[in-house]
Image (cartoon, rainbow, N blue to C red):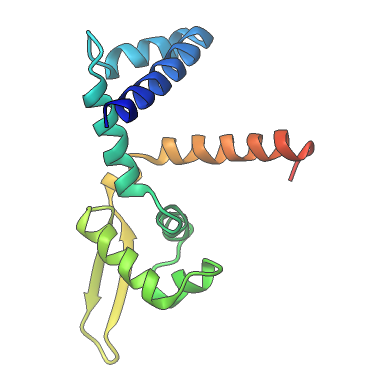
Length: 147
């Protein structure tokens, strides 16, 4: 376990130091976020918490679908190729428990259920944009051309 912690810490430290050298703004941001002295267990726990909440194959595509205006279960399901009804249902419940989305039931005939992202979910919009940017750049680097 100690080896795993050390490997994660070395990774986080090297990434932080590399990006900090690239840009004064990033260096200042790192100073705000990281403790002094650095606390490797705290940093790893924060990374693991983030990965737990938004990690996996489906959570970010679901958030993307919701942000693109899909509110009904079937609309979300249709917008994400490969997701099963059971998986979408499970992921939506977990995301609701983590306060990333809100489920609203309108008593009508038939009952209408809609999902929307919360302000809390929108708080990591910048992170998602950076992930999309990085993913596009990575694909271009690996494939040798634009998508």
